[in-house]
Picture 1 (cartoon, rainbow, N blue to C red):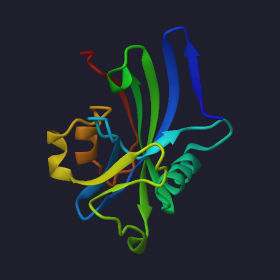
Picture 2 (cartoon, one colour):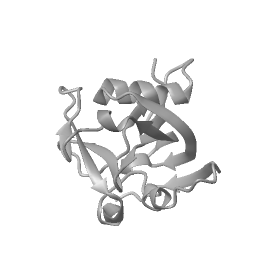
Picture 3 (cartoon, rainbow, N blue to C red):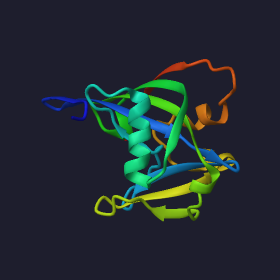
Picture 4 (cartoon, helix red, strand yellow):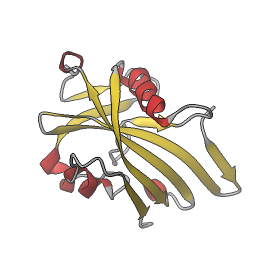
Length: 160
């Protein structure tokens, strides 16, 4: 059961996502009609470790067997995705997959065809030119280091 709490016009959710990088490109996705990119992942479930959530989500959405290498960030995201009163607690992992498994074209539709999620490999140096949520990710992705330090970020999206 996905972890989501709703109270009148307010919502809280737990989202777990993975950072998959190959050849200086990062895998992001958006809905066909959407204009903002996010990291692949989904809602955490009750009694499921977040490391297992990211593995499950990549398998369900992409048919990819990934390994959760390490926890990168915890992002408390207020007004998530530009939605007033949407509080997302995001858990972000660095993930790895076998090179032989990552043979997808530059842009493709995920396995959940009825949802119509478009995936795209985007050059790391192009992140500053795209609309990405949470916005804090633009800089965080550029600064991934090997120091294994987990960062806790408070991110408040501007409402338009």
